[in-house]
Length: 138
Image 1 (cartoon, rainbow, N blue to C red):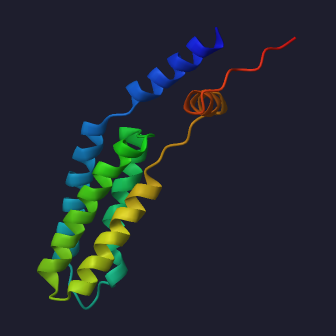
Image 2 (tube, rainbow, N blue to C red):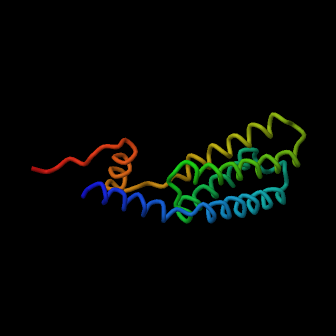
Image 3 (spheres, rainbow, N blue to C red):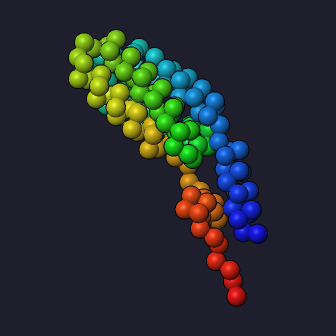
């Protein structure tokens, strides 16, 4: 009885997340933000502002794409990292900066885009992942 309820909860979580929408948000928002960044004078804009597109993309992905599982968060995060790497590569000639900003943008997007689940969803997911049965109330 409880196992089928857990499966329904997991099915609902999977149905709510949208990998396609997350990818579109990652590509669109990070490209747009980096375009705006490229229009600003380079001596007035700090280098860490290159991470701002990753933060904004991650928040949009979290609340609109609603990913929970790792794969649904990893693909958009890699897209944000690659777009950031391309923007840094076109702006500078330093391979070190490209690597650092691409990795940081990917990690920022990956960590910030995970949505929170409520307690019942967390319990159901934990039981299904660890193949546990729900405790029976006596």
